[in-house]
Image (cartoon, rainbow, N blue to C red; front, side, top):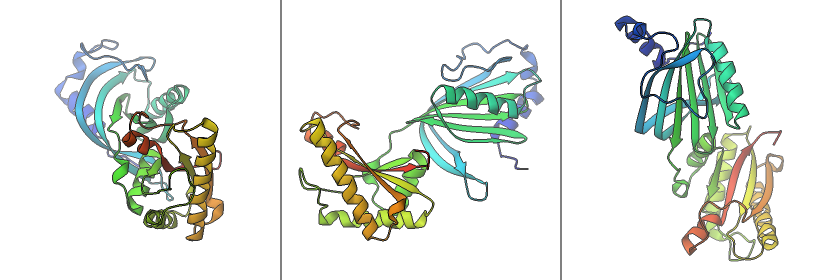
Length: 282
């Protein structure tokens, strides 16, 4: 059975040794700590301690690998942690079960969960992450607002793969088209080659190629243009040896801007091809 190296367990033992936790009566909460609005304290649990960090970095499990070991990703940003103590009947398994159910009901995707002598949950919605670490009848909830990723600086296969692992998608700003056209420009070839290399290194991935535009023109024209551009990228990747069955394409048009359409620079960010990792059910 796996035993995770959880810093929470050491903190619990240290607190018990110094008698800090013994001073707090069941149900009595530490002054100044505010309960989470996203994942309020579980039944028969109460706040013990809390902490905030304006700059924090974590390595968190986001999925299981082929051999069942956790695959980790790094996140940076602001964090708020709350440690809860529960009645003696609580266990890591019950804490994991209850928190995953509550997160799913709140529309926050649970990426990873593990239960053993300790429990772990990683969940995410956009750049907002929720981390749960359980040991004995204690658990720590960390709400983490990750810093916006610098997608424009990613230009190679390892960078694309890391972004997809971390965020589930990555825009390819190096893919270019003439204005209003669907033919790929010659300088797109380098990025396409890197994407093909990434997919060769991850043969189990199924990718949706999405086309996006700015808001210039009509909705119908933008949707049609984005669909044809996405299809052109799929054709190019297939020519580079990627199996067609691993690729879907979709035209999103101007429905999902990543920047306000108020300047040439922001509109250029909205004109993009994105790769989205999908499952068979999507």
